[in-house]
Image 1 (cartoon, rainbow, N blue to C red):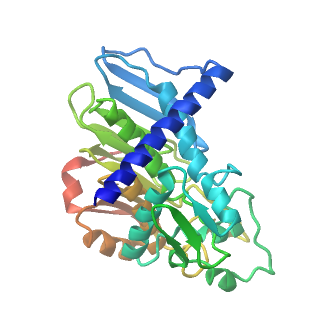
Image 2 (spheres, rainbow, N blue to C red; image 1 turned 90 degrees about the vertical axis):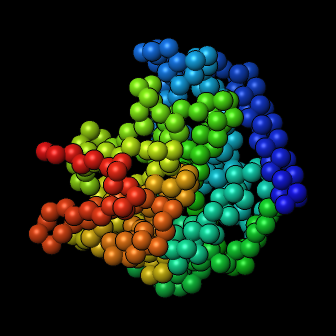
Length: 354
């Protein structure tokens, strides 16, 4: 236990040093443009920016009116340098190019531990080694690669989170074909990283959102729980078309769905959610899975797993995990929507009536 405590302290010191170095470098190169809305009331700060190929929005209450934009941007630069597949020299990219990696930053071992736990709890439905299949089906960095010569079943044999070994210092491939991609959990972890940063600064009331994944703590400027919407699961719907609203009581929240990220080939809709066991895009009636958990990283991974499983198995998984709150939207045979809500979520959920 003392050894783990010392490691956590070392990781924290390394993280703080990296943030400081990146912040100093950025300020030498340029004066960042700060996106800071004028608070409508004293102490309410709203920040917005870009990271991980998407956008972020952060609202927090601070009577000192402190602006953390530069610090958060620098922190996210360090985070991406660890786990991005789009940065050639990130820790993750380095590991994918070889068989062993020794960690320099704390994010990699944290996400590995979380991934292993959820991989086990979902019987492999959540699997960060599914990346090569995601790429082959056209949802990776390089676009569609699927050819008639590709043997999906051969590729499936090289997928499986049990084909790597790791501890708090390094990660090793047991199969050199393994390729890790944390896109189904990393945004959630990034949300948590920003949330922990705000907490370390004494901020107890905040809402952090990165690419639709969220974590909320405390209350908003009206003294109410932070409220967020769940989109209607329709291809042409926009962010203002909501199916329901959820009040977040100190929870992380993530939504996964197949209704937007897809393409059509030979009149068949190809979903971006790939089943790690079959190697093929899923085909079922589950349209959207929203999961609330103690942190956003956990919610993110479970939401992905449920979209792999489909409605019935997702409900079974939700019922077996009382620490999660789950909201599912699925299509019914008559073309209308059905939904499932965990009992513990019902007091915090309201539906939008048309």
